[in-house]
Length: 230
Image (cartoon, rainbow, N blue to C red):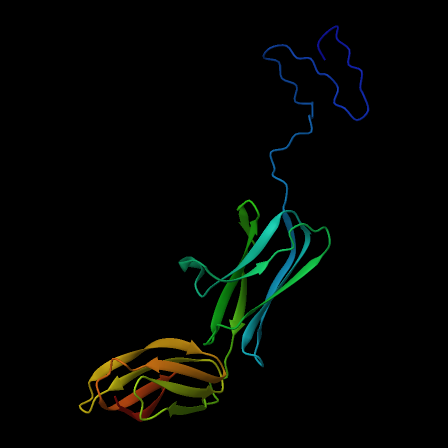
């Protein structure tokens, strides 16, 4: 208060405070804050390895969402090397009720510890990160990977199909070799899921002749003789 000036409080409103130039009153609370309102309240974020399904299951819940756009799911094997986004889940937008989310990471092909975090993005593009969680993945490496392969048509003029059946997810790569063992055409490396996968390979650029198709699935190698025709 300034001497001689009275303040009459009004319910629901801030009273008038008079101060002289340079005067400071630290007892006055004007009700202002520099903290931005929370757009999403995350209750929990957990993950677990589902050995029977060969995937990581991630779950999280929110109790409040304001103008939320989506959750980016990020993963890494080494936190110091940074995270990579592996998927997105659409957010509720605006909600004052508990909302549950589920994401399944099926792109894992070896044992190890994987780290996950959520990148919560609002409609205006602003974002914030969740805590980081760790999930230990254990494949049954004792049991040998079982593989079966079929190639058709053979002979072939334009393309071939490579049918692969594997017991668990695996890495695949291949190549066509001539009679003296020289690599003529490479088949790009890729990951294949458990079960049956058909890979189509264009062979139009191969000269007419007989080739040895070498296929490597994880650490196992399979050969198939291929005849290229006009």
